[in-house]
Each structure stands twice: as structure tokens, then as C-alpha cells.
Amino acid sequence: MPDPTAPPTPPVPLAALLAREDLGLRRIAGPADPSLVIHAAHTSEMADPYPYLLGGELLLTAGVHIPEAAGSGTYFDDYVSRIVAAGGAALGFGLAPVHDAVPRALVEACDGHGLPLLEVPPQTPFTAVARAVWQLLAQARLAELRRVTEAQQSLAAAAARPDPVPSVLRQLAQRTGGWTALYGPEGTEIASAGRRPEPPVTTSLAELAEVVRPSGPGTPTSATHTAAGTHLAAYTLSTGFALGVATPTREPGDHTIASVATVLLTLLTGEQQSGSGAARTSALVRLLLGDTAEEVAPLLGGGDSWLVVHASPDDRRDRHAPSGARGSARPAPTHPHPPDLLSATALGAALGSTLVDPVGDIVQVLLPADRTPQPQPGWTLGVSAPVPAQQLALAGTQAARAVARARATRTPLLRHGSRPGLAELVPREDAQAHARALLGPLAEHPALTDTLRTWLSLHGSWDRTAVALTVHRNTVRQRIARCAALLGAELDDPDVRMELWFALREE
Image (tube, rainbow, N blue to C red; front, side):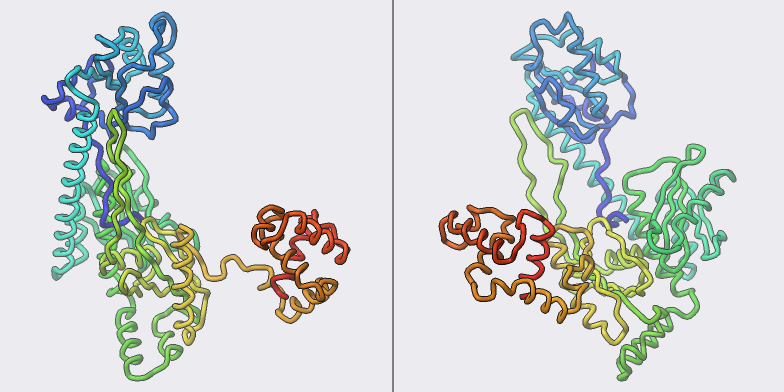
């Protein structure tokens, strides 16, 4: 589930850029479709810009790459076809200092491939065009954030009404301009709001809701589909319910708005479940009155074993900074804010638990051991081993260490002990006895043992081993040869190296 506080940046219409009188841009080829949009502006004088485009860009060029005999061959057709294949949205051609006019063959190629071609006048630098695109993107982003913020406020107000579930569904339908439905744990439609679509759409949405209904490891938390020209989306609620949304169009912030509604409906439907809220309250009271964790845990309905998840919000960097004709500036990183209760609850809903606790810059989530946490966009997760209730404190330490390693290695999700070493598969006493027997011939030669250990750790590099031991490389060769002779082993054999490394670690 994407971060509910950060909707994606909407693209901007190409027509909005053409309407900027200060730029003086003019469309001279390609379709005049008002629905055409751009995601960024990029400058390139490469004859083949394909490898450098992500899709959706306005590509700016002064034609420096065009050879003198280009008009008599297929150069322009090949050039435009590669831009289209890369997903380029439009091409801007700058007049002067290289070309006084846009080559006629380029105009024909753009018309043939359906690529909008813009003429950039001499007085308009490419940096001005890129800045204008960035300004339009920022305006669109601000408008989308304002829309999402207003929707969040209205949904929160709806959740406080005497009829909270129908009120949230109505607000969600109004904010997305579509139809919303809440499906119960048995798949039946419990409530709905908005203009009801035709039966093929409602049937498809009900089927999509079944896709996200929790059914074991790997169940998605959200799913999308299209039926009869209608955009469908379904979201799982950790309480066994599912939310369905059907809209005629799909705006960038709709998923974020629906995610907020999902969190609220999870809390609301959780209160309607068979005493789960009361059970959690009872567990808290009994803990405060002195009962042990193992005595209280059964009230939470999680079985005999639990997982502790520590989640840290990722650093967010703006990956859509504009680039001008003379290069681009690297955007400065922005550090994440400590997670609030809303984002923590959203994370818990995505993981399938309402037992969440934001502490500083970490969100702690308590999960029954039969649930399998999945990576969550925008978060770095550390997961403990399954433990009984009396060892939850140990599980918390495991999760804290796992999330620290996950952040250090840039791993979205890391489990405690998820990659057991060979030593963990062999009893400690047996491993040590094997090491003593295997390395016995070297027992009276500590220099040989140290050299062998260093050499193996450096993947058999003579030079790096010599530097590490501050000896000559020939000394290293002599010692390793002596080790091979004493051990009676072929040290070029990877199986032999692996066994020796295992023994050296257990020595």
C-alpha cells in the first residue's frame, strides 16, 4: 500500500505549457489532443535518446546531433520512432544557433508517428521551458495535496458521526466521484454509497474484493481492475471486511484517499467485531493489574506465538527535478518525519493488525505468528522470530536489530535469522570438535592459521593478504603452500575452502 500521506505527483497537460505566453512555444506537428500530458522535461543532443528516457518527458533538442545529409535518408524517422518507443510525450526543437528552422523531414516524421512537435523560439532557453514544466508540476502537486488533505478531514469528520460507516462511504464516493461498497467477511455487500453502476461493474467489483480478502500468506492488500470502462479498486480491511471503489476516472490521489478511508473503516469495523475491542481493553487492564503476558495474550486472539515488527519510514527524495539545457541540480534529500498515529495505523492495516504503537521514529506492530509480513512501500521493516507471549520483550529486541540491519543494507524487509549460517544448523559442540580435528595439523603453527584465515576471508588474494598481514606476497604463498601440505588439502577446491572457513570460524 503506498504511503497514504504522499499521493503521486499528477502530470500536467501539454496544452498548459503551450498556453504560457512567456515561452512562445508553438505546436507545428503531431496531434492536438487536449488530454496529452507530460511528467518532466529533459534536454538531450544524443542521436538516440532512448536509453535516457523514462517515459512521459518533453524532450528538448537544438538539433546538434543532426548530420548534414539527414534529410535524404531515414535519420529523422529513426530518431522520432526511438523517442516514441521510449514513451516520450513530446519533442521540443530549439531554433538557433544551429538551425534557423525546424527541418521539414522532422515535421513529417513527428506527424507520421503521432509525436507532438513544439517549436522553441530563439529567445526561450531550454532552462526556461524546464522551469515552467517544474512550476506546473508543483502547482498540480499542491492542488492534489490540498484535495487529499480536504478529503482526509471530511473522512475523519464522517467517522465521528453517529452513523460512521455509511458516512465514510458517502464521503469517499463524493471525493472520488464514484460508487463505494463495504463487503463483509462472508463477501456480502453490507453498505454502499454513490450512484450504483450497472450489474457487470458491481459483480466485477465484488469479485475483486474477494481477491484481497485475507486468505493466507501472499494475499494482496489492494487490487485494481477495469470493467465496462470503469476503474475498480479493492482494499482489504484487517478485520476481514473489504472496501470496493468504482470510479469513471482514476486520479493520482484517489488511491491515497481510499487508503485513508480503509484505515478508518478498519477501526470502525473492528469495533463491530465479536468483542475484539473489548478483549484488547481487558488485556490492557489485566496487564496493568499485574497479570503476566502469557496470561493476557489469549485475550488478543493471536494464538500461542507472536511476531514483533519494527517499521522505520524511508527517506524520501524527489526524483522528478527538472533538467535544463546546461545540466540539472541534484535534489536535496528530505528526512522523514516521525510517523504519526494515522500512518502507523495504515501500516498496521496493511500488515493485518490493529496492535500498533508509534514510538519515536519507529512503529511497533504486534502480529499473530500465522501471518506473514510483506514489504510495504515507504517503510523498512524488521521482523522478529515467532515467540510465545512471555518472550515478547526478546522479540522486540530481535525486531529492533533486524530493522537496523535492514536500514544499513537498504533491504525493504529483514527477518531475524532469515539467513541462518551453516553453524546454526550444526550443534555447537559437534562443530567445534570437527574444527579441532580438521585444523589439528596447524595447531602448533599460529602464523599459518592466521594466514589461512586472512587469505580465505580475502577470497584468495595474495596481494591483499600480504597487505593485511604486513608481509611480502611471497611469504603468503609459502605459508599457504605449507598449509596445503600439512592439511593434505587442495586449496583451489571451493568445497575445501568452504569447509576450512567453517572450521576456522568455530576454532
